[in-house]
Image (cartoon, rainbow over all chains, first blue to last red; front, side):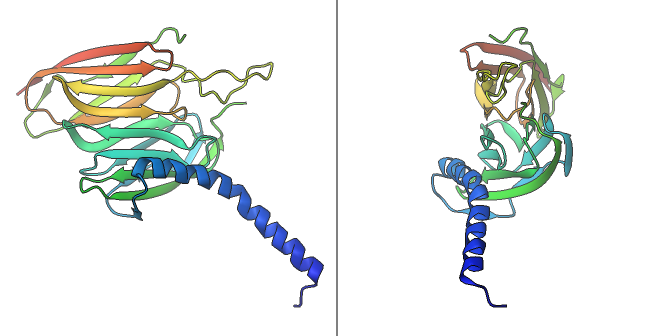
Length: 139
Length: 109
């Protein structure tokens, strides 16, 4: 199929618009991550566990728990919320297992991200998608 | 500002060596996110608990930074590893400057 110049323009504009919308939210997530890590690299995978429900009927109270053995701090972000930061857990010298549970608000279906600062100073991240039936940010 | 703020804390009666104790805390607080609007369309100003700490005999167990995305009546569950009897001290810091405190003793066997 050969695109006319007009069709090609429409397609290009469409893809730019589609890309721009999530970019705005992602940028603030990146800011929050950078503020937490100080610009250090974040690797995916082992070292941090995020437990969140697959489907949350009520976005006002979504139970989540994070667990990262030996971590000194864990940051939780909700990428689709108006303000992505959710909570930062800083573990002190008497912390037992480096885990914590809380209840959070999610405005819509989105990824919840947990980033842990491990004992050796490296950062690992994990994320989990939560489907939200009723958003939790009010009017 | 926030009325009827009541902290509730669940701490086991005693702890054993080498075993972590699970602490559960809840504080009644509206955690107004600053995103909601009242019926006239005006934004309701943010009013949340922005920090929670737990110490045991003066040593820090956990220090949590809370954001508006934490639910009403913030619930936090975590674990502590202690080596002696003593007292857990829980502190919540409100946006309006109020500080709410609670403490619970624990035995060590």
